[in-house]
Image 1: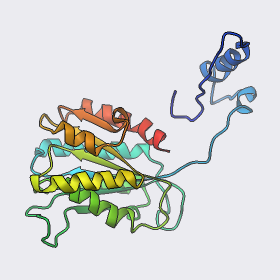
Image 2 (image 1 turned 45 degrees about the horizontal axis):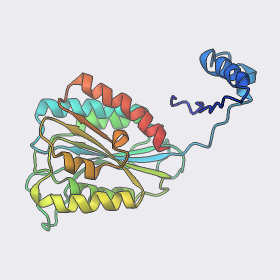
Image 3 (image 1 turned 120 degrees about the vertical axis):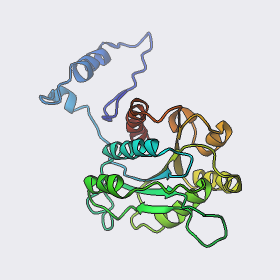
Image 4 (image 1 turned 120 degrees about the horizontal axis):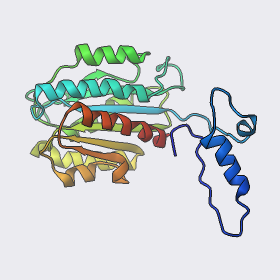
Length: 256
């Protein structure tokens, strides 16, 4: 199975004549040349209409992450953008994927103080090109070094990024990059916000970085099945993040 959309699942019973299936498999999978496509195969291929994605990355920019780790995560974010078919007209068109990035939490943030729990780096309609997003991540994203407020960040992102954008896409994903447990005063809102998001049809994909984490908190936050929606990395090094970059590709495909 791959992400071309051309894979097949062939169920063979003993009484079936499965030679035709094997011939199709040989010609159209094992020996298929996309530069010189076999007409026999092209007649059998069907692509469903593309389903586009609104994906918001919630970046842990708290004091739990070291400066070097934060720079590695920024590079990871830039690489992951290559998995999306970025819309060239995100504000007026219904085609193409859209990506937003927010960071949590600013120094001194506490609930009921009237301050935003996140810094909005860019929303779904800020940029029309992938390179512009990458440039913003590398040049403008700075570590905030506040206390972790993941639950408030998820709720704020839904209310102020997803629900305010025109032409919502069919599929909606929240990709959480976490460097440890959220703050004690944020735990209750995290439970409620993540459950509400999943009930409303958002896919929650969680990337846990570092040695210190709360396994139950992560599992309650991520969508199911967990093996598709939760990755726990002990280190924030390039080889590990490269694995997550590759993992995200089939995740986006399955989401569609």
